[in-house]
Image (tube, rainbow, N blue to C red; front, side, top):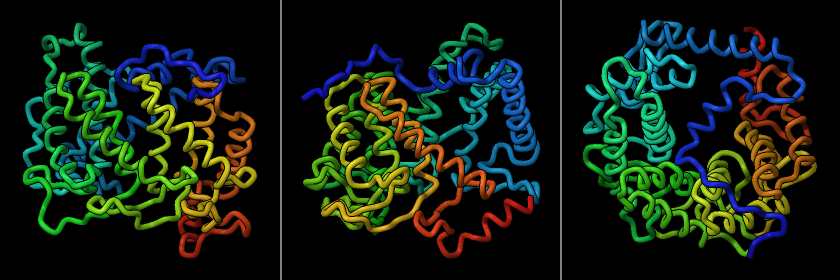
Amino acid sequence: MRSPGRRLPAPARLVAAALLLAALTGGAVGADGYGRARRVYMKNKVLEMFYHAYDNYMTYAFPHDELKPLTKSFTDSLSELGNLNVLNLVVLGNLTEFERGVLWLSENLTFDVDARINLFECNIRLLGGLISAHILAKDYSSQFKHGLYQDQLLRLAESLGNRFLPAFETPTGLPYSWINLKYGVMENETTETSTSGCGSLILEMGVLSRLTGDSRYEAAALRALRKLWSMRSSLNLVGTTLDVFTGKWIQYSSGIGAGVDSFYEYLIKAYILFGSDEYWDMFHSAYLAVQKYFRHGPWYHEADMRTGEATHWQLTSLQAFWPGLQFYCTEQTLLGDVTAANLSHREFYNIWQRFGVLPERYTVFNQVFVNGEQKYTRLVRQN
């Protein structure tokens, strides 16, 4: 049943990359109190920071995954799959380097590698990056100097998506959290995964199906999401970790932070992107449950999904997306609570101002760091 005031989304582009591009170009800030000079300064500062990182990466680490800045060396945590970051250049308007990146990836990137990857991380970063870059490359193809774009990145995305599919071959349809890109699911692979790991796949895999005409990707992600939602408690709460073979919860305590955060994010974004009432119904029920059982003033604690009773009174850095999600819901569906979003955002900002960084974990009542994390902030202050 639709809630009062809800409106259906306008036809959406297939991927959020276009929205990101619009948000980072001129006029995106709007009438928010920032003057033009301040916006130009902030834009230039971002460009300076990006190219500081990018130029040093290209000098000392390309084509490896990550730059180790202190030693000017590199690491390959993703088996040399992390070099898709070069595609970020199109967002900054650097079409020359973007085209060079597209051509290099087209000729050198392969997913036929003996690499054990995390499905969730690989989905949001590699598959999402390829799809976003593909759509942007189509938009700017006429400006390429070395010929029109021929869907090379989409073919790579399709290859990666095909390698994801064996992860979903479980009795429940819930995917393994780890898979080998060359050999599939390995013997004795763990069957434990997180709510985010099962519930944050529908955007990328759904868009891949729409772009290729192959329904298998979206069908697999949707089956997993439906199964996950069917496992919610009578309070419409979900846990944090579960077993993909038995479909049983392992960790009943959960919140809006690590292990669960993107589950909520993907539900509302899937509704806006694809327009299906099913995503809205899931999100609406889950959102109301969060506001009822997790919220305490401006804070959101963790609670037992079965009883709604608080379990951990702590702020975590991965909760920081929630005020933005609430505001976005207000703009798109007239559901979100701007007042509540503002209160939470203000508290996050106050903590940031106090320590110079947002702590990974911070106790709400005592207002101190969780044991073992104090040194993290001391290092930030020293720098």
